[in-house]
Length: 491
Image 1 (cartoon, rainbow, N blue to C red):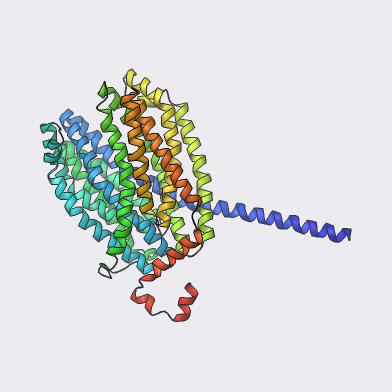
Image 2 (image 1 turned 90 degrees about the vertical axis):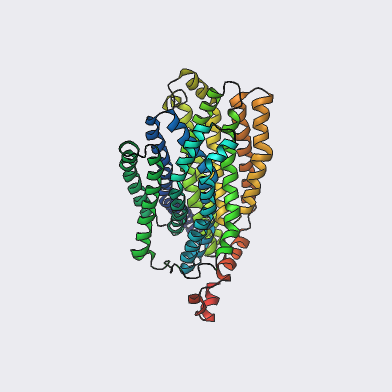
């Protein structure tokens, strides 16, 4: 009896060890897959942001008028155009991700083509607005001379808008299939070409600072061309390629049902931070306050590319698993990525805090600005922590297809709580820039709390069922030839 008991105990211990090894193996595989998707997406995000930064840096050598008009034009175009396109394209993270998980490869290609067509059509009225940017800026109270130059710059930037409308669906096309190396190669090529082209157009042509706008469009179109060539000729994309005119208009309604709330979800957050900069201009000593908040926002935007890339990876993995009808796997992805982002946030915010006395010099040599930035550093570190978690939670929401709920959360968090709190602390309680920053951080914190509550109470089985129903609701002609037996196996 004792021998049998010992044997059974040994078997139990072995089974426990095997189970623990299996869990650690799954965690390692999931971390590796998230890194495989998220790492390149970080580089892709940085590269697209880098194109505009390089252009502004080169334009800065043409004088204050060129620099100020270019900065205003890029800021206005980001708020009124690029942010809308980026937000609408994120709908494909849900639709294409779930279609790929359900092995509806042809539908993924059709959805991508539909997204490109829809965003190009949306870009037409946006480009008309850019055409009249000078009048809009003058109406808003901007300097007429700066407004005229900014208006001209925005007209030269219109080709970049249409390129961006084509680029973003292509990025989602590859990302939702976990095909990242063409994204890396095309981004690297566009950056390498952008540097000499922008330099030549700005300094060696008669275009001057308008050449910077043209170079941004050229670099975006180069990125698009490389991705289209890879999609066309690579055997990796053979299953998901679809004819350009195949069921193109059939999915427009479905795309817009997700694209509009997706756009609101991203834009409401983006615009809140732009509004923060605008409010800083009404404080006493506006040059100092605006400069410091610009430094803080630039730091946040740069560091946000890391969790944002992993948020895109999270959206892809969650949508893939839900489309495949694997709710437990989707829940496992969420647990792993949340642990991963907590580690990332602690490392990044700690590094930033340790370098709080020096990172201000990256943006300014004025001691007053640097000292103010140093005093703001703990608040910036807190924002890094909150934004890191928020980026992942937003990715989970997109993967589940709850962009409409995310839009309402962002509206309430920022515009009903964050911005009013910022205005109260900054102006009424005389806390100036610190008050504005604390207020927007409060909005971010509320957003994170609400997204966390929603994530905790997600019914993964129900979300997987809805994802499958959505994917198979509108079958392509190829799917209709499947036998009833094959259809039953799919479900």
